[in-house]
Image (cartoon, rainbow, N blue to C red; front, side, top):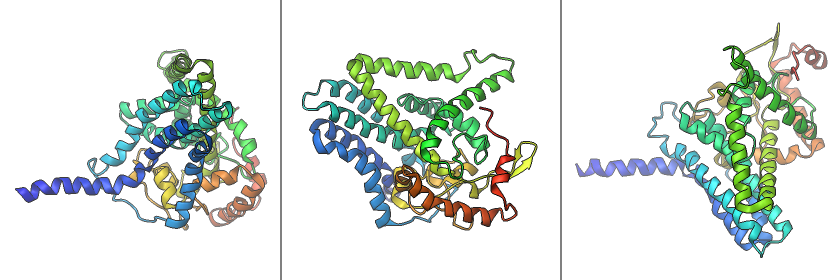
Length: 383
């Protein structure tokens, strides 16, 4: 009886230890408060840790090619799931605590205040939106609701509709706004995707309502919820921090959106599903997403870099996402942190990625010899 009783906590301890690396992101919460309290150079640690420390760890720790057991139980996944749930109140308290604290912090100059919220935006974009992505794909209402809260905190609530209704359906085709075209630099991609993704998300929800003979103004349109949550958070920022608090909140949101779209840019850059005619495309396959098996950045991004398997099984929880080898799916030379930094410099990006796209085309679609003419025959985005 005693041995059986002792076996339960030992089993739970093993489960927790396996999930522990994915909890590293929570260390950014106390670091944010230390930066706010100390000011000065400490503020720079927020983007430096998020971008550079995990890139360095990738170089030291290398790749993780192992796959988790697909038969893992809910008990096996408990500690993995919990980190995404705990993050929501942790981000809320930190973000709005700082909105209240920073405007009245005499030891912080104007530049320091903006720089601090730039760092907060790096975190809410890199971690918060990524966790919302995990939560929005789950079937229960609690997790989907938490995803909406995280997205509203960065004023990008429509991302849920765009991602679920548009991106997963049209990925790697011209009808997907967030699939970056070959040779399209990030600075051209970014304003395009900001405009098109909002329209495509709204149109997708309106079309769903129209199929039920309902107008877009019907209360079942989730955009009413999106707008209410976003307005509520802006008002909360105003109450807590005044107009300076609102300004800092907007800085954070803008940086977070930029971080998200940098990741969107690299995930499918230059990749194209084969057009079958009449506006139809082949099914999404592993080779339609860029992957990275780098260990540390997959801890930070909860296996988002195993992107091919996410598109194969969108509701599969992050700890059991499977790794694909180079023979099945294209591989990035570095993890997402390094690649997003490279994307900010289009000549460098093209030098790294365009040869890989051309090799991908030869490998998977050798029958297409004129890609310029082929792409002109695609069905374009309606907007």
